[in-house]
Image: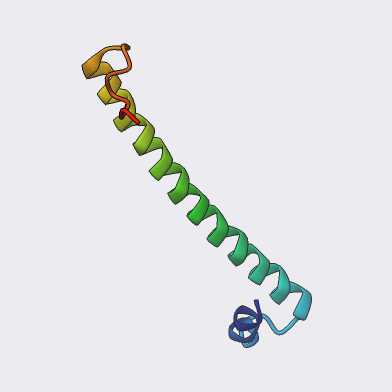
Length: 65
């Protein structure tokens, strides 16, 4: 947050506005990473469903422990 505030100092001289822009940058960053995690999870679930679809619903797709 401090780095963002320092970089935005010349563009936004008013501190509350600079703080709001830096906070919005942080929220955007978190949303991008959350979406990336969600997409990876979605892809893993789709791959698992493909395997189940190929083998049927008998449980053959699970590893024996």
